[in-house]
Length: 219
Image 1 (cartoon, rainbow, N blue to C red):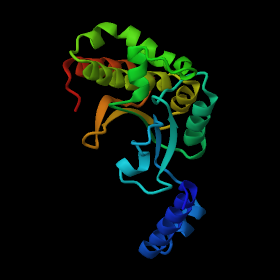
Image 2: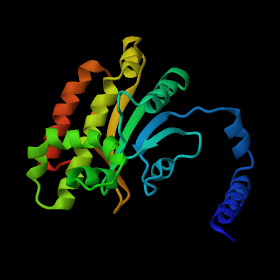
Image 3: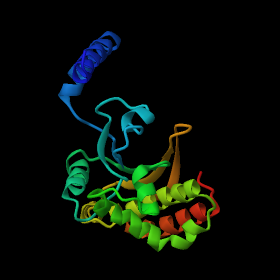
């Protein structure tokens, strides 16, 4: 059995197991998509969005890219956000990074990776902006972890400043942006920034988060 055939085999096993556990599972899945959350995370295969928060298919709308970036010229990401807010009416948008992120580490160390370096330039900008805060941590791994946290914070700010979020808040739509980081070694999520529920809440949330990060005291 080759690699692709293995996937077909596992797919059938999974589908049969679902039906045994819940005969109406697929009928409900087909009927509607009503996710309560939008997750913007890293493409890393070790961070499966639904699984680490214990949600079933259909319960979370997901967008992933290398280093969990929200770039204002990325129409793919922005289209996902707009669909989530305008059509699905999600109320919580999560930006989730993870410790041990290869993209973040490459941006910090200057590792040559080819085309993707252009994408990771956004993370390098975060590292440059907070170079003193990063340099204050001893050890390359620890500095990379700090950049992971700071990158999440930067993407929370970037997302909160998009026209999609600003328009949603302007029409009094209830939606909050959350910044989280996931640790591979224990499977636990940690909050990087307080929730941002409107433009006026962004700067206080950023200030609180920077203070937590500088003290190494994420809740």
